[in-house]
Length: 175
Image 1 (tube, one colour):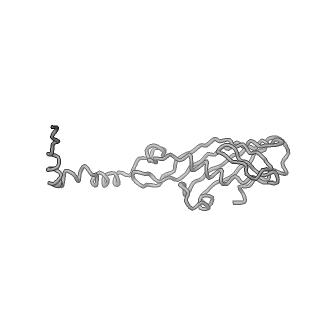
Image 2 (cartoon, helix red, strand yellow):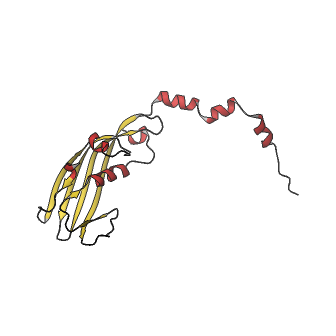
Image 3 (cartoon, rainbow, N blue to C red):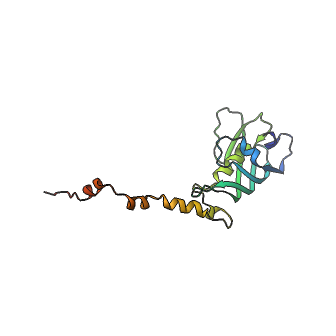
């Protein structure tokens, strides 16, 4: 993960550009990652100032997702644009937020691996479906047919417990 560190202490003031490749080896370093595989390129633009840095991320490529409906793995195109402000402080208890990263004055490099990991995983939709996130991909028809065979509506018509029928006939007496 050392390749995802930017040694900013030797950089002059102004704008600096960096390129990073993200692949399966990157995601393997994070045990509980939503994304397990992908091929992405991160273009990082770092604008160094006296007391802070503004870092812009442009991440493009494909990530391999698993469909929540048919469990098929498919490639999904992704494009992420984010901005991170890096501030320097001498205080030990400075708070870092989603948009602001606080580093100690003595730090000399910026580790962007956790930031890239977060941006990629947060960009993944909560509900993943082949036909929505994939390019011209549909769910596996065999799996969909099997799921419809196992649906609760099919099972209800096949076997109804007579005790439920008796309970449905009960009416409340309003006296």
